Image (tube, rainbow, N blue to C red; front, side, top):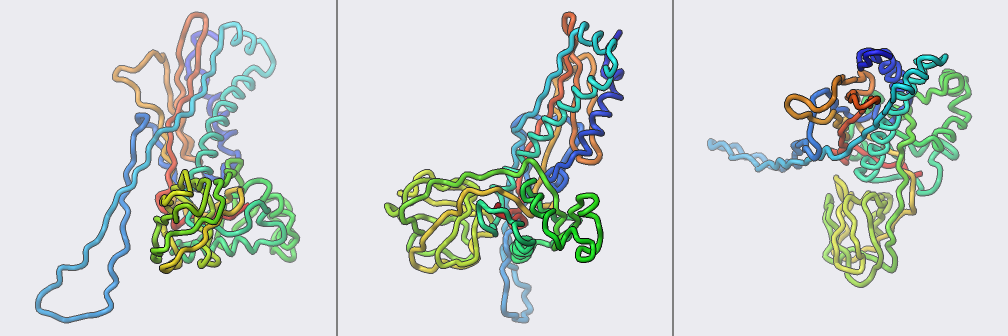
Length: 391
């Protein structure tokens, strides 16, 4: 292959893009994707404003003097673009000639890029699954069991959490992403694949989940498995009590042992029916340490008394969430002025997923290398619009 450039492989590269973009990526398809071709730096941050709850006045007093108005609180949250996904494809002249002289050589070249992009995509998908799991508000279901073992009722319970949190639910913007094990059980529910009961043959003929209870149901290999902390003994919250909406819960010293970790599903004795997802855990439950829950915090005040704390078992983190609650930022790395040693470079932007892949060609001694690099970060900006379906 004389005068090898990326331009001569554009068809192969875009064939690879088309194949990968068609593969199911439940999280990437469901989150807000902030993608583009401009380069960014590792460790760069994205800021977002967050508004607090306003004061609700319950009286009205006409007056010739206009009131000052109640104070409003604006805070900022940040996301760090600190993840790197990089695949390098080195090729010698002999290897290129062998491919040229072999039936299917173009296909083999395409597959090199297919596998590279698939690896990057899977890494991003897995990161989304972990971050969203840990950024959820509350959970429903039974840890360690398939949520669709008998029926689809758990989806209604999941919708209730989001409804109670004020999250608008509609299939265009709200998704429930499950693993393939849950998806298999879902497909086996007879009332969903029987045409006379389901109303159509989409699930039976095409495996299309469709929209259920306001969710667009999707599968992902990136659904995260959570290993719970080692909390033991008789752990309780502090006797001072915690108000409705509180997110910081202090433990009573010397009554519990072990750890509580981010993503744990926490229950409080007097708060039946609510299972909270931990944002920040504690390294030693025997101390008067403080754990932090994700927003919107407690649905019920604990009262001025100690309350027993317990963790759900380890679970699979199927999640339901609104598109606006989670952002994926993905960019190619910034290049120095004048460029680096690459002799050719192109940015491949996929309109379907919003993912950007920068492919650079480096020429060496009897050898070339294609480099595919992207920087990315995932953030749950609004935990209130995320809920976990324990599996």
